[in-house]
Amino acid sequence: MNFYDFSAKKMNGQEVKMEEYKGKVVLVVNTASKCGLTPQFEELEILYKENNDKGLEILGFPCNQFASQDPASNEEIQSFCSLNYGVTFTMFEKINVNGENAHPLYKYLKNEEKGLFSKEIKWNFTKFLIDKDGKVIKRYSPTTKPLKIKEYILKLLNL
Image (cartoon, rainbow, N blue to C red; front, side, top):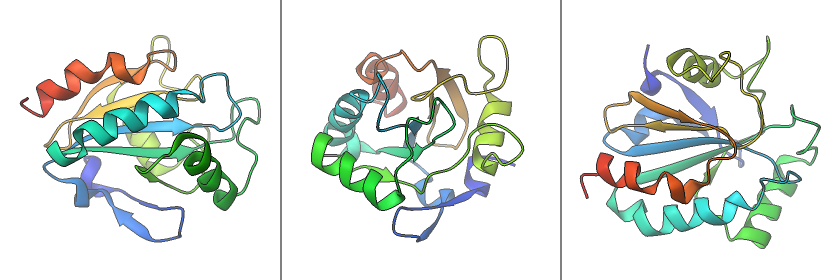
C-alpha cells in the first residue's frame, strides 16, 4: 500500500482519491479550530499560495480528538477556516486520527513515520510531508511551524 491507495471525503462530501495528487508534493495536517496552534492555518495558507502552482498540495483533516478543540460541524469548520485564515487549500471532513476508528489514511501515515515515542498522533497540527512519488518523507511535530518546513518542500519541488 502507498499514499495513492487511499481516499477521503472533502468538506462537501466529494470522495477524493489520493492518486489525484500523483506527481505533487503533499503536506497532510490534522487541524483544529480552537487550539493554541490554530494560527498555523495562516502559515499553511502562505505556503499553499506561494507553491501550489509549483506542485504543492496541502490537505487539512479536522480532528476533535485532542481536548475537543474542533467540536463544530464540517460546514462550520470550513467557514471558520475561510473567514479567519482565508484557507483555500483542500479541507476534508472531520476524522479520527488515533484509535480504533482512525481514518485508514492516518493509520497508514503513522505506520510510515512514527512519532518520537509512539505511532500515535500526540496533538493537533501534526504534519506529514509526502514526495511526488507518494512516499512519506517526514513527520513534523505539532509545534513545528509550517514555514519552517518550506525549505524541505522547495527541495522536493526541485526549486
